[in-house]
Image 1: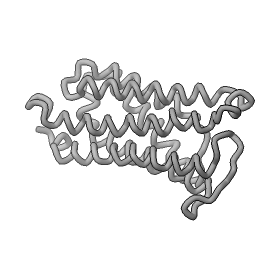
Image 2: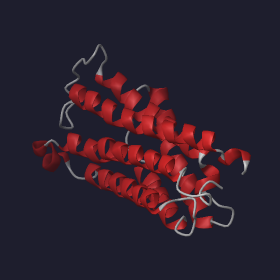
Image 3: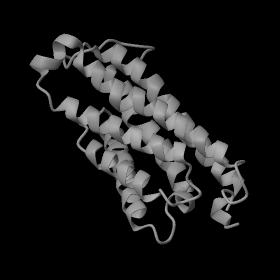
Image 4: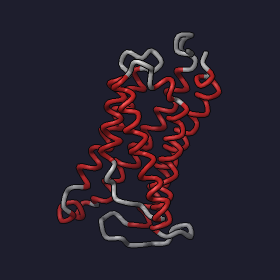
Amino acid sequence: MSPDNTPARRGWASALIVVGGLLSVALWVVFTTAHGPTSVNEDRAVLGGSMVFWGMLLGGIPNLLIATGLVLLASRLVPAPGRLARVGYVLLLIGLIIPALIDLSIQALGAPFLLPVAAIGLAMLAVGTRRNPRVSRPSRFLLLMIGVLLASAFAWALLPGSFTDPIGGYRIYGVFAHFGAGIGWVLFGFSVLRARSRSAAWLG
């Protein structure tokens, strides 16, 4: 067993991804309460924090936790001959880490310019790991599902506010980008934990 593919390492990776997903869901609820359901910022104070403060946490912390977990899983997700998976993995990390660092540096939730990068990376990673016995079918499905959610969020964000605001469009965007994707990451983290005990072949 390679030193970077131990059960303890996978356990930490799974825990980081699960916590990141849970924080994405929880922080989205707080942030959208502070911001309001439309593109107009209502800037309510929630739990002593402003919309800007909660947006910074939402955009930064979950992504960095999930990215760290994925880095710990690199040897499982990116086998040596898997070029498609490798490119997807790199794109996914770019789509997670760079926006997180930007949001933390500007201390606010920035524009979702890199959502398509993460979505494409997730799709490539899901397809590129089809023949990887260390990545289960549920894990691949969840990666693809998260990618679809992020792509849907970006497409929704491109619609004019005159159409989306009357139906709470900003909140709907968050359901795709943060709430739904967060749940997807939680399930993905648990799927990695489940894979630990499936068979000796999966343990590497």
